[in-house]
Image 1: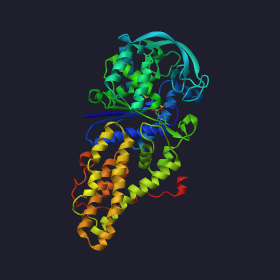
Image 2 (image 1 turned 90 degrees about the vertical axis):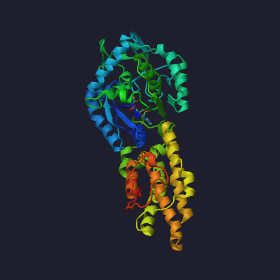
Image 3 (image 1 turned 90 degrees about the horizontal axis):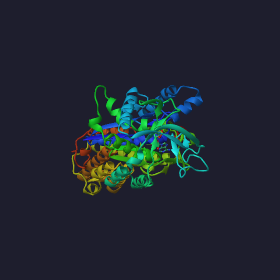
Image 4 (image 1 turned 135 degrees about the vertical axis):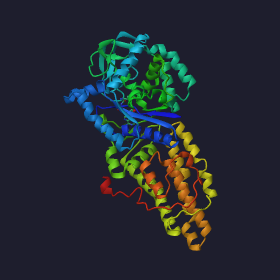
Length: 505
Ligand code: MSP
């Protein structure tokens, strides 16, 4: 089966921050997990390069928008690589192939009568590249997200007949209760649709940096129409000489932040319906990472630098922290203190220690060979069915819930098991058979949880599985007791070494 997951494409008007890394990490975890299930995965990320957000900053910096985009895209590509994302393609909306495909799609909407000329007037936020209605604006006429003053704009442009999709959208939401997840976001989207949909302007007359409307070249497409289409256009040219659209569309999951729900939950499905193209299966809407209670963003200057964190603690620790600390789908606070606390308590002490103790005991008591023995019945209670529970969570992109389950039924349970069984006492007392069972069960439990954790922490779990003499990452193999003993274990330097405060500062 095919599985297609996307991140939003990021604006190249500033440098990447943890908020961007967050969705990229989440999408990667989902993609890696599905590959472990032997799905035919396609994972797309990229950059949103047209429109006011980029043109305005370029103008302020006195460079051409393309130059700004070329300069900043490097940092986004670097971020994607540094977080160890296994994306299959990186789209830039300035790719000529994308522009041609946008023109073709929009021309088809125009030809089908979904687009007509009109005049727009309203409060406009250039950072959001969005008009705001009276209920949305705060403190007089400020953007609720960027807190900047909005501009009153009026111009002749073209409108997309969104109002015509009121009923089809209501039907879509009624028929597909999982179209938007979590439920609260579904309700929000439905509420928005029920307020009554107005047509939206889909071109800009004043702007030059964008894809030209083929039927009126004095206009470029409003950046959101151009951007949303990336999810479809990329499939046609990601592989040279091959069109992947049939194979992967409709997308299984668009992962998005809560600020861009309206575009993805309302405008995007309406555009697709207008073109007679299938809508995506699910949108999963995550919350904001907050620092000191505010959304982290470059413009607010309260940024936790993901690069610094990865330099000191490694990529896997950042990946783990992002999905563990903040329940995926909710807002939540992040902080350097919170990060260090989880790094020490959970990664170094719980998982890292479990790994090094297990390997050390196998080396010491059994000459480095996992004994052939029976899986412990006590552990089976928690470990049997864990992989299935994790699968179910992943089917709904519940990445934090899945991780919590692996941690409590797996990592913590195994640590308790070590304490309960006290293998060192068994060794002293010469209880050979019992010790064999315990060491085998620990190695096997560690293998199972490491396969399940692999999507979250690919580097660390690979090192650990290597040391356990195991290389099968398939979810099907993540069954407690499925592998016999007999493997030789290797040496393993600490998975999560203690970091000196000076290094962390
Ligand atoms: N270019 C548009 C998306 C177009 S998709 C067809 C855009 N770009 S963005 O760079 O401003 O934001 C990209 C994503 O990052 C959004 O999903 C947004 O919610 C997310 N985040 C930005 N800051 C964030 C946090 N502080 N926390 C979590 N995610 C946040 O919007």
